Amino acid sequence: MLFAFGIICYSCENDIKEVESITQKAIRPIKNGTNVEFLYSEKAVVKLKITAPKMEEYGGVNHYLEMKDGIKVVFFDSLKNVNTTLTANYAIHRVAENKMEAKNDVVVVNEKGEQLNTEHLIWLQDSSKIYSEEFVKITTEDEILMGEGFEANEDFTKWKINKIKGTILLKENKDSTAVANP
Image 1 (cartoon, rainbow, N blue to C red):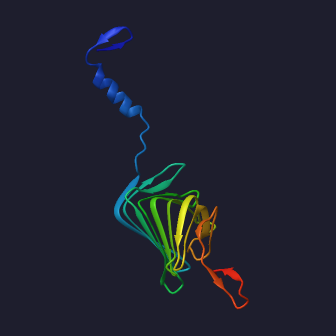
Image 2: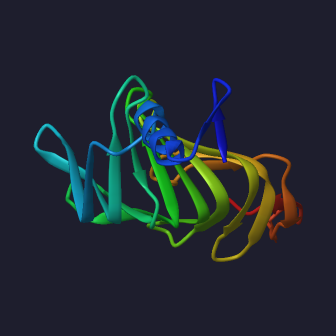
């Protein structure tokens, strides 16, 4: 039983739900697609390809694209050879900020076979940088390095781990002094 202005209203429940549904500001996608593929190029040279099983685009002041079912980004060199891949179970691209966030089982692999694993990665497209403030693990041919946070260029060929942990392989040089593996 519902009360409206002190009057008993037995049939108002449906009317109230209808008013609530009209006045609710539900955020709904303006576009959506399945098996989506984007190619990004500069001066007629393809730089990267993004694929996602599902993509939803939301308009307005905070325009963004959301890939709730995962994403794969393939970076190409100038000869269109694959030099880096990025995969994640979720991604959001904030269009106005030129920023993409990848979350949940993020994996980045570069052309040398070095692999980054983390749960949250931010890609700043304007500065061509990727970074994370969370736990990261980087596996190289010789080492497994871990830390809290890291930053790199977008093709993950130059990187730095913050608060590093792990075993670092040392090599002896001709002077019998140990140096860190390059």
